[in-house]
Amino acid sequence: MQTSLPAPKYLQEEDGLTHEQKAFMSSLPSEKGWLVAPHHQYQGFWYTPKQLQGMLTCQLHFRAHDSDLLLVTTPKSGTTWLKAVMFAIMYRTRYSWAKHPLLTNNPHDLVPFLELKLYADNQVPDFTSFITPRLFATHIPYVSLPKSVKDTNCKVVYLCRNPKDAFISYWHFVNKLRPKTLGPLSLEEASEKFCRGLSLCGPFWDHALGYWKESLESPQRVFFLKFEELKEQPTVHLRRLAEFMGYPFSEEEEKEGVVDEILRLCSFDNLSSLKVNKSGKMTYDGMEHEAFFRQGGVGDWVNYLTSEMVERFDTITEQKFHGSGLKF
Image 1 (cartoon, rainbow, N blue to C red):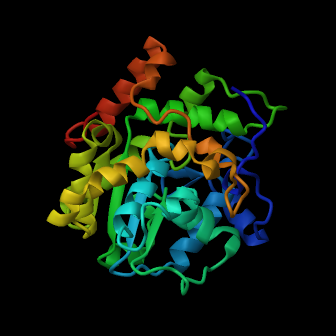
Image 2 (image 1 turned 180 degrees about the vertical axis):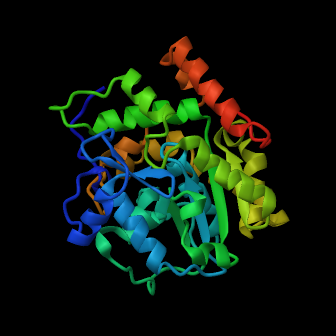
């Protein structure tokens, strides 16, 4: 399972942070992380130093537009897939299927993360070259979103995944990136950290619950989508997603098979087989694209979790989501 893939900047150590940023982070609760960088707790959630720096810069400087769309996920919850899907829906009249940007670009480069790319390294990006309407992504929990996102008509799509599958996918991802000198992170240690909430933007359950509640209170602004439902009924939920985004499919598009074409273009099998995703690297941190494609399935946790781990996950899920109406 172990390889020598380079870790992205947001999972690395504190190099590049200012003295003031390091001093601030030293004042926060801190614990050993999953890779090399420690995790710091801020506003109830855990971050690596580089990710926290990017989020704080984003909070200060990002100005959302009413026409913006924001995809939010916890790590390894189907982010790459839904970035592709939303990009294909939103800009479908701009490109032909034969020369579509997704054929030659990784979805993470087409739909950038606010805190991991655009506001990383203390930079304030120039948005003048961005296509309007704009499409962004983030792992930031609802409580920490930039104020402008909440004060405008910017729409938020939240993709949630069964916590057991999200955990297994994240564990595999991290072990692809851990230095060989550290050796792989054991399933037992990783499970302990995840269940205590110590994971990127964790606790997972608090992250999901924050957006779930907002989707109930403001369904016109926040759309809550489950990975498993999208896998089970992709056509149904693709139409629902397009409707929410403000880009519903016309009768003519339905007859022409546009929905099916988007699902084909953005399928795991198609995306993972493209040259750009088999051998390419991220433009902003050198991360190899292949690290984002493993299985893309449902229920893989049964191949790894012990009965005790399953019981702990299920107990936490039941306790955290009790009375909320959110279930898996």
